[in-house]
Length: 137
Image 1 (cartoon, rainbow, N blue to C red):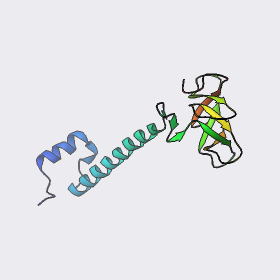
Image 2: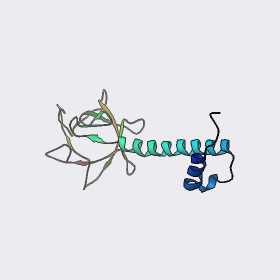
Image 3: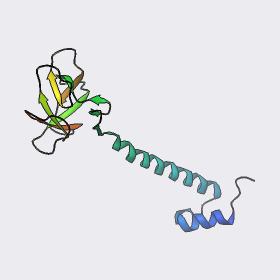
Image 4: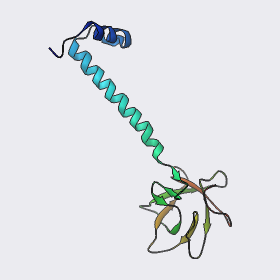
């Protein structure tokens, strides 16, 4: 039978998972599968958290470009930013036109490339406004 317990399986359960001692074979198998699935979900969650990174080559954050025409909004932003004075993720220079380089923002009221909300905490990225040398530090 495919579900018969062998001596090696019993030894594995008794050595590695002492809580399995005294359980029936089906309960042991079910508990093992549930534990394995929970561990895989936990590992997936840990790796999913590392996706929020700035791509320095393309000057993007999660495929959102960090330059161009920016509209400051209060709701439904594409990106939330926190203004800081030290250790920014991006140095931003406000320009009047041609915001084509990394960190150059042209503030507009309509037809933006990106909608940005400025927050005090829990931002996607931290920015610092500069007069020269914008971009990723």
